[in-house]
Amino acid sequence: MEYPYEFVDEKFELVGNHRNKMELYAYSGNIDLELLKHFCFDKKKNFDGYFYHIVLFDTKSNALFPLRNPFTAAYSDEETVKNIRAMYIHNTVNEYSKMKIYQSDKSEYPVLEFDV
View 1 (cartoon, rainbow, N blue to C red):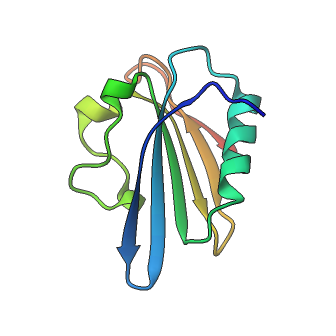
View 2 (cartoon, rainbow, N blue to C red):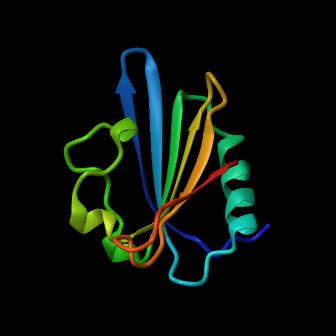
């Protein structure tokens, strides 16, 4: 299946014996939740580490990895956070699998959270 999300970069993080991965994508169109869920489900099938993250940004130029935090702590830099449209986290050990959709005005609207 073809997905509209543009791959930007990926990074691995080793924590003890556990390997985590974060992939960055960009997409400026309207988010189709079912399509995004399907994309994340397809991507996680090929991951054999511990934590797997997909972060969807508004544009390729705004897609950045967390500056000081490990992947599992996510983002703390407000300038970066304001450009995140969606974030997917999957834990392969306990099968935790959540999608967060960030509204355009993050100060006014809550984050939408879904099981994937």
